[in-house]
Image (cartoon, rainbow, N blue to C red):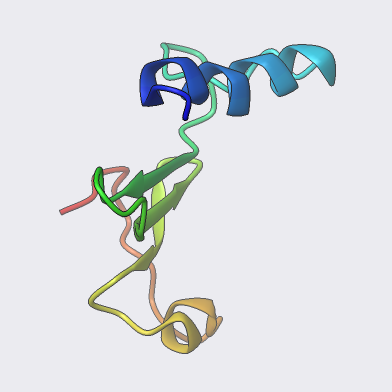
Length: 79
């Protein structure tokens, strides 16, 4: 298989460049803060952060995190 260090740019930065999305595909000042946190061994989804805000965490059910009535944190910090 492909090493994670090689697969990550192929799955993030390259598509963002192809689609002309300069704020996507990387973590940098001025880029969108969209992140998937994965378990290193199983690549299981642990958390999703979009625009700097947490939207899913494994401790919260997907139904609850998708519910618009659930209050979102006011800061751009994920704990």
